[in-house]
Image (cartoon, rainbow, N blue to C red; front, side, top):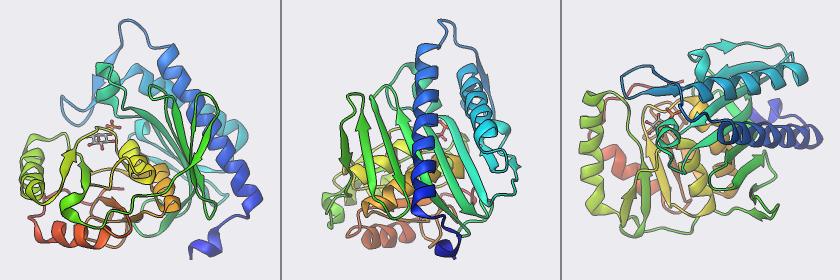
Length: 289
Ligand code: LIP
């Protein structure tokens, strides 16, 4: 199904370049135009924050996509997750600031995630990212990929490196990232899962950005990342970067990404980690779009 929907490589190259330009441009905006007094609101809980720069970055992204690709669909985090369907068969999936709490606190691990997908973005297992970029302005890098062409990271000097997921195969030697929802009752359940996993792995990391955790597996900076409760906009671009690096991307226990969260792992580690996670108590997070 994916291959039937895949645009040709020339089109994909153009889409990838546009995704890089969009993510990098929004990344510059949220850093250079951040006001001294940052306006902050909340969403699902009082710790689920949205800043005025999340909204400005999404306006920037939507405006450029509307001008260049008026017939494409759009799914943006700050639209309350509402899908604006298009007629072209392409849907842009946007997280204007992923790792918003890190951005709020002045920590470096935040990113702008821009992906373009084919298929039905509202149904896990029925959509496939075909081009995308994750810009991490405080790190000075942008990760990017297009289908069947490999994954890359480019730095602020313009140096570009192909990404390859790690060769890790032993759970006890693996560096695993995860993340937690914003609701306290869910966090308590997620804590019990990570507490059971911790003695079985090298160590755990909690970075705060699903987009960067996913790209970090692609780059070999992590051996795996799992999280329940993330949304398509958090991981759509990072999923493609990871898949093109040779990493395996599935649900936590399901085959389809986002059917029950996401699991991104080095190819020789994925099976053992998924088996271990399946044996741990489910943290109760429902499927997410
Ligand atoms: C974040 C995710 C992260 C998760 C955080 C938060 P946001 O997205 O990228 O993986 O653990 O709780 O959901 O809210 O910064 O766009």
